Length: 272
Picture 1 (cartoon, rainbow, N blue to C red):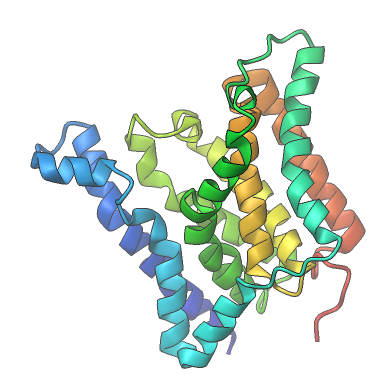
Picture 2: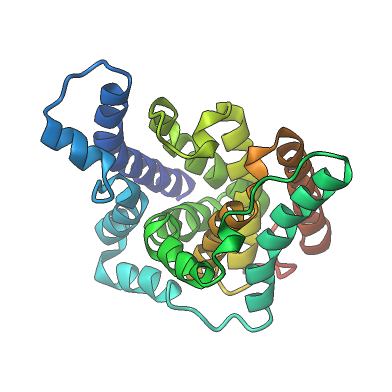
């Protein structure tokens, strides 16, 4: 049974990477000047209709259907609609703004110049941006895969902390082709190890959200949205000192989670 579950995660990873990289690798080849592709293909791959980001969702649904049928897919999607988070609404909404905004504030106290807060100059756009990010900026496309499928299946063979770390590594490596596309966000203009460390630490926090809300994928999606939104509102990645401080805060947060909730479940509740 253990090997069977590991095999399913492996199939999911191949499917998620295969779907996304089918579109990202050609884009990277074009960006690096290695392929003189037709203009219509260049425009498609560089535009918002490139389906690459949907790979984790497509893979999660496809692999779930292959092994568990329609009932398994229904259960997976149901977890995406688990919006009754109770007090965890506040935890999910505030964790990343506090951590990322706090990193910038601490950096400023150390004498580093503050970046220009472009997003805060458009307060009306803030809630609109959060909705757009939730549906089109990664959370919906990815979290059914990373926390909804990979984390939940990995934790059947490992403790929750190890499962969250492995899911975070998978999440980070999935982005690899984007490091060869110069127009991509700040994440991909920094060393790969920085992204991997971020996805592991943030992945533990997102898994913590899900583990404490009865496996809610919605909690992970909302947390992922708040992470992306907070990096836009508080551009800590634009400052080396703020980015290093942020890593420290992430480590402290993960340390607190493990100390308070335990590595076995990340929720303080023993699973049957």
